[in-house]
Image 1: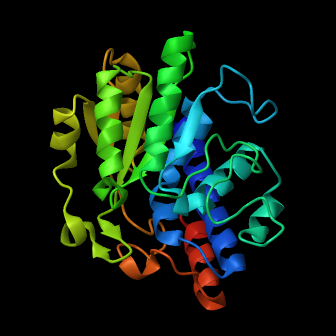
Image 2: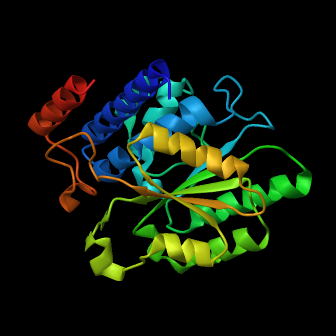
Length: 275
C-alpha cells in the first residue's frame, strides 16, 4: 500500500477511535473495547473500499454495511461523522433521549445506517438478505458486515452462514472481530466457537484470516472477497479489544464501561500521540 494511503487510513482510524471514546465518555455509558477493535476495519471500508456517498446516503447502487455487533455503535457513529454523514458534534449526544445516536444503530433516524441492529445474530442475517436481494435484482452493490466473536455463539449466525453459501452470495463479505473477549470473559471459556475459520469453510464460505490492525492485510482480504466467485467471504480478524489505549487493551472489563474524566484524558493523549 502506498504511504499516502496508509497515512490517511491510519489518521482516519485514530479519528474513529477518538470519536467513539468521546461519545462513550459523554454518555457515561457504552462499549469502548469492541469499538476500538473494529476501528481499522471501519476506516478501510468507509474510506477505501465501499461505494458510498454521504451526500446521497440512499442512492440505489451504494454498497451496504451492517454492524451486526450493534453494541459497538460508537465506532460506527464516529466513522459516519468522519465521512460527513452528520456533524461530529453529534457524537456528544450518544444515548440521550432526543438524540438520533442511540445505543444501537437505528436505520430510521441515523443518516448512513442501512440496518438497525443490536440483537446478536440478526445483523449478519439482514446482510445476507440484502446480498440476495442484489442477486435477484441484478444489482451490482456489495454488502459488508462486522460480526462479533461472542456473537458467533448465536445459532442464527450459522443459519445465516448456511443460507449465504446456499445462495452463493459472493457479494457478501463478513468480518469476524476475533478479539477473544466478550462481556462474561474469554470467548473460549464462555462458549467456545473455534475454529471459526474451519467452521465457515465447512459451511461453504471463502475464508481469509488477517491481523485486524494491518491495513495491507485488510486490503488484501477485500480484494480476495471481490475476486471470489460463487461463495461469500468470511474474514477472520485477529484483533485487540481496546486497541490503541494501553489500559483498555485485552481487558474484558472495558467491554461495556465508560471511562471517567482522568481515564478519558489519558486515552485521548495516548491516541493523539500515536500518529
